[in-house]
Image 1 (cartoon, rainbow, N blue to C red):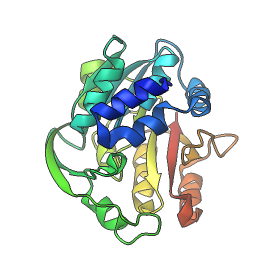
Image 2 (image 1 turned 90 degrees about the vertical axis):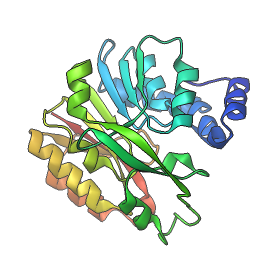
Image 3 (image 1 turned 60 degrees about the vertical axis):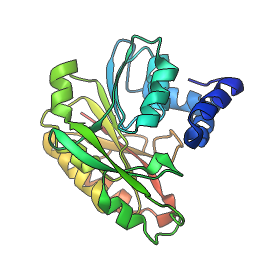
Image 4 (image 1 turned 30 degrees about the horizontal axis):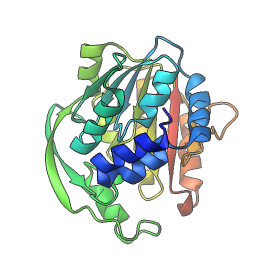
Length: 254
């Protein structure tokens, strides 16, 4: 949802390190409209979505505007607190504070205090960012232990989702390793500093069923291909992107 400036300011005062996230993800109506248009092509009112790596919950807002029920998973305590504050009165949102991975248990979360949006469970992601153009100055300055569940366990508990959104900063393949059932549609974030992770995710998804793929670069909320393409074409497209494309979301459809 788009929030008024005074509400964004109040949230920022309560969680100062998330101020920029509130401003970026809750203060841009055209961005919200584009997001709703994209997800509206995938989801109908009454559907169920899993939001894995919710950050401050902007995707939750889009799903709820479309009438979609949401199970949201967020491991950062501040971010989870912010989601509770924004969606406290919404019975259509179920928030679970934790991470998703290949098996249940616990994991170490590498926290970027200055830029929480790139906090990650992947030490390889931290290594890939070190010295990479566009990632200068990023510091993962502390670590916390968080509980972990799997996509299969979430499905067993909450039902089969119509869509799964995964945005976990280089840990996407680990999340997909906990999924053994094909779902109708899903997305995962990729970065150009870890194209190998994107390729692995595409292969893992293709092994689950006859998926076709599309991609939206950055926060454009705009699908690149007019029609979804086969797994091999999507892998080749990601490999061909310039480094400064930086990131985006790959979408997969049965």
